[in-house]
Length: 349
Ligand SMILES: NC(=O)C1=CN([C@@H]2O[C@H](COP(=O)(O)OP(=O)(O)OC[C@H]3O[C@@H](n4cnc5c(N)ncnc54)[C@H](O)[C@@H]3O)[C@@H](O)[C@H]2O)C=CC1
Ligand SMILES: O=C([O-])CC(=O)C(=O)O
Image 1 (cartoon, rainbow, N blue to C red):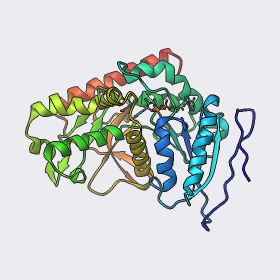
Image 2: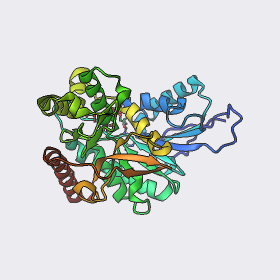
Image 3: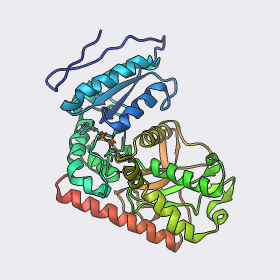
Image 4: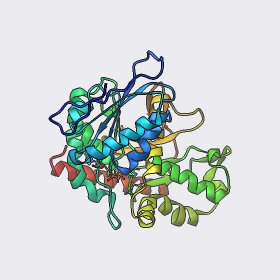
């Protein structure tokens, strides 16, 4: 049976026929901004199993009312893929209905920046989205919910959502810096002419913004120290760091639109690793609420090197931070503190 409708006044569900014999309860996955460009890639990656493999899933897709018609078209395309593990899709414009019972929430829906803007310029436009969604998650999400914010400015939006969801533990709110992490690995692999999978222990520190600090001083390539192999401080400082930190702007400049498929890929990878764990001998970059580690102000959502085991992440401890890295980390954290102050003044937290 299929029922769909447009508008928050109507309870909408799209019931699908179960195509496999699995009796496992589907994992309920909320995705916001579902008719937007990131989700045009993200939803198909999730539904095809890139996130949870063979686990049955239910997609719960949130959009604003005028975009629901376009979202219907996306759902038709999901249908047309006949993904065996996609058991059900629910679409709607009311966060309280769409987030009901969700185990995973990917908050993508927000305005993207245009050429010439910094991501922080989106705070006043996008911040309010995350107050409403934080409140709705607080009321109706499953007890085990994990929330990943991709919509920019991602770190501070995650802080807003978390501050508006007092009953959900703070550590369940993350923001996406995995795209920066992947960009850094790719740039380093190109510089050293090595396969990208040989690069381990890359770290992005701080904010998903042009102040972020991609750190190769602890990264390893085939077991050897990456910075030592590069052996070119000028390249690290004047080419590598700015290329990674300003990659989003370069893509906007080239494409006329912000990155989408790579952002979707990073969103899948972050959530997959959070749920299923990180590989032995490596770590990933996750923007998480700071516990004060590495002198990062407590409470801001800042990127750290993290390992995940049994569904719980931990910050990798004991890395030596040299004076160059210290200055870079402090600058990005200072920006996060400014953003926190700004959203406090806007009454969003
Ligand atoms: N953290 C990261 O690494 C990255 C973040 N982004 C950010 O992701 C966000 C989404 O990017 P795109 O998909 O390219 O944008 P888009 O404009 O194509 O799609 C955004 C969608 O969100 C929807 N939306 C707006 N308000 C909403 C609300 N209150 N509830 C639900 N849906 C809502 C819009 O109707 C639209 O369909 C942007 O803020 C962008 O800057 C983009 C790339 C990387
Ligand atoms: O740069 C942007 O506005 C989109 C984004 O966050 C990225 O590509 O990293």
